[in-house]
Image 1 (tube, rainbow, N blue to C red):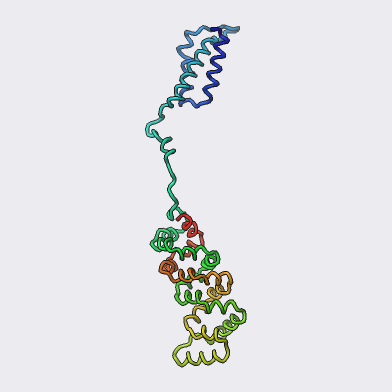
Image 2 (cartoon, helix red, strand yellow; image 1 turned 90 degrees about the horizontal axis):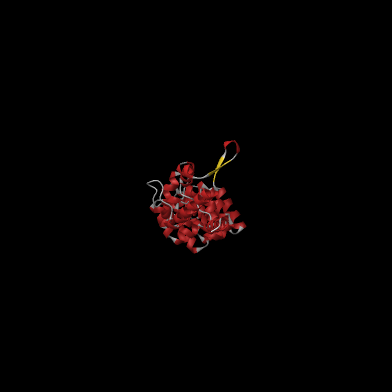
Length: 282
């Protein structure tokens, strides 16, 4: 076979193999062999001034050997590298990321992590009404106010927020103004005793509409509406609309929500959006 045909066959063989990464140290080993013992047996061509190169046949032979070795390792696999790393590639292919849990939601506040890993949070995730309420944008916006969040610990406040009578008063500008004037004038301020309550009721009947009188007659409502944060929330039409939903009203007094309102990390989880992220992970 002529040199030209041998060259063409070798070129086709290399093209068919395609690119592949040799094992570590392979190239260094080949070059060592080229620069070592094989060089003593190879015929050389001498050039002027003492220079020399290896013959073409020797170079082609070494290239053919390298190509065959590379093809062998490509098909059979390269040998393992350092001890302790066996099987790492296979392990990476089998790895499946676990489902995100509450503990995976990272925050800078330890109280948030404590809340997300508590039984209180677990009960919230299992209460569909509570989850719906805590996913409502208008309600969550109000929860970011610390004073409003603190007010929700009071059962009177929670009752007032879900009372249709209160919603009707705050939905009517005239009635809301009337109720505000009554509270500001002190008709509902720290009234004690049956006689004082009767006097207040008489004054209210003479000056105010029946809806406002009904509110003023309830001391717990007067106390709840005396909180500026509660008044501001009820003045928001979107918030009142949310509270009108029966499942939201029920969720306000659920055991899961009441426990959450009293947990130190609950409000911080609301402010940092960690609660919403944890709900999404569940």
